[in-house]
Length: 261
Ligand code: PML
Image 1: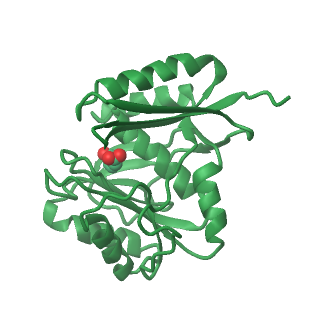
Image 2: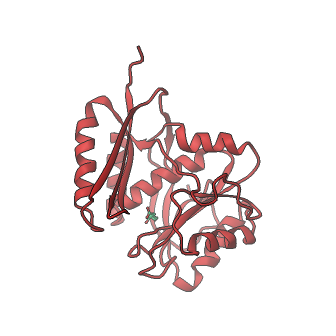
């Protein structure tokens, strides 16, 4: 009989059919009851409203999670007028064309929030099999030790919240896969105006003012080169990954074309 040492816990909550909150993590058996309770509390007390439907899936993992490091994090000090140009410059420096970044912005800001991310080649051609749903990244988490270290580092920057932590965990998993060379993300939360770009060279670069307050849509684009799309999708959706080491978390920076240590 297979003994599960690790479990994936995924929560999605909605109110009147509209998504209100979600959570995702990988935990040891002894923590499951506590985590399910925490997920339920989150769904019932979310600022977008108390959920009337909560789906929590607890699944024993057949594979031992891969341990990886988080991407280094920083926040670019930038005015609203320069954000798109900065995103283009960062992503162009690793071989992604300006056209691809423009296409990604267009896809994300078109007015529909997809459930998953767009996959784009460096020329901006969409490669995911379902262009309406995109590809959802699942089965990722953080060890409790790494989570405590990350919280401490983010607290010093005034950034210790679930939104930043969860986005960093997701993008660290995504960017670990060699075919992925960059990512652009804009939140779908109308009150959350900071997005980010990532590359392995620059790390996770937060971009304040990437969208105007009040816009209720957003999304993610992963820029990819070479390799088998189906293997990439399998990794994103099924390979369990745990962040066990935390890289540097910096405050405001003004230059990002240098490698962030
Ligand atoms: C951050 O501030 O670093 C997170 C930005 C993107 C959040 C995406 C989301 O809404 O989950």
